[in-house]
Every structure is written in C-alpha cells, then in structure tokens.
Length: 117
Image (cartoon, rainbow, N blue to C red; front, side, top):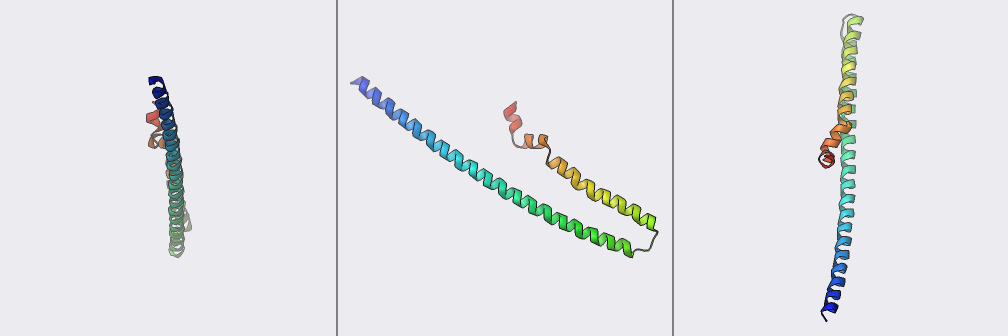
C-alpha cells in the first residue's frame, strides 16, 4: 500500500512540476514580449527626439547663414568662422553617436559584464 501511495505522490509531483514549468515558460514569454515592446517604444522615442534635434540644428544653421550673409566683413573671415562652426556641428553629434553605439558601453549597461565574469 505504501508503494502505491508513493507512486501516486510521484505522479502528482511530476504533474505539478510540469505545470509549474509551463507557467514559468508562459510568464517568461510574456516578459520577453513586454521587453521587446518597451525597447521598441524607447527606440521610437529616441528616433523622434533625434529628428527634433536635427530640425533644430537645421534651423540654427539657417539662422547662422542668414546672420553671416547680412554681416559686413571679409569673405575669408566669414568662411573660416563658418568652417569651424560646421566642424563643431559635425563632430559633436558624431562623437555622441560613437559613445552611444559603443559595444563596451552597452555591455556594461546591460549587466552582461557581471554575468561574464
């Protein structure tokens, strides 16, 4: 009788384990889908912010060119000033993108560094 009772408990235990694993797997899939949705929304927000900043930079560029066009001074001086301003306008977003897209930064921020060590 004890053997039958232990066998039934064994079957119930295996059934409970299988059910628990299915529940955990389902919750994991839900968590994964929510994480993908959140990252998608963050990417859309970042892209929108980037485009707004680009429009602001183009507007500032237009104001700058109009100001230099209306300013009475030598053409060589205007061109040199514009060159350094354009160099800055190119290099600042370029450096920021290099930092933002760095694998080392994402490796550290994602917590993979702690897992790898």
